[in-house]
Image (cartoon, rainbow, N blue to C red; front, side):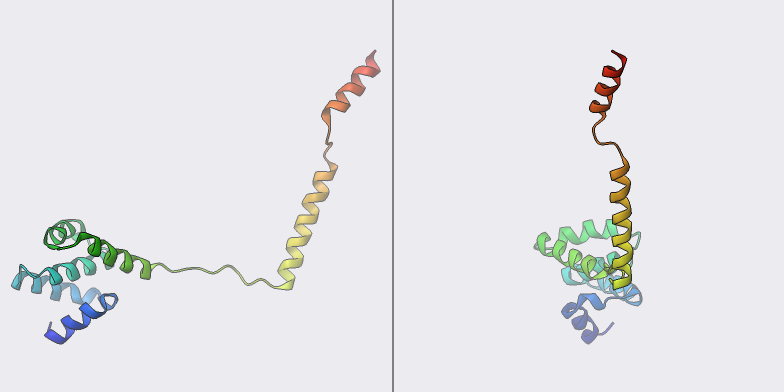
Length: 128
């Protein structure tokens, strides 16, 4: 990894990919006190869901000057990874089908006897 690539990853950590893991691992070995390299390495491990992530996170947290910023960076990577699925398109045909289902449910409810106590009273009065 050259200097320009490293600076680009600092400017936009979302561009970190699976190919950069080995490069960041080497940079952290060559420069063991560089907190930026450790943080980018942890972000890379998190993004690629590596098994080394938990252990390296502890190390990076020890080197980080502000853990809140580290958490914010990780949350930002996590937020950009989530895909939002939109509901199916709402068309007049689907609206008509939903209205028919609702009307059927209402008519089924109307068929249900609403006051069971009156029925019991009527049955009791008949037996008297």
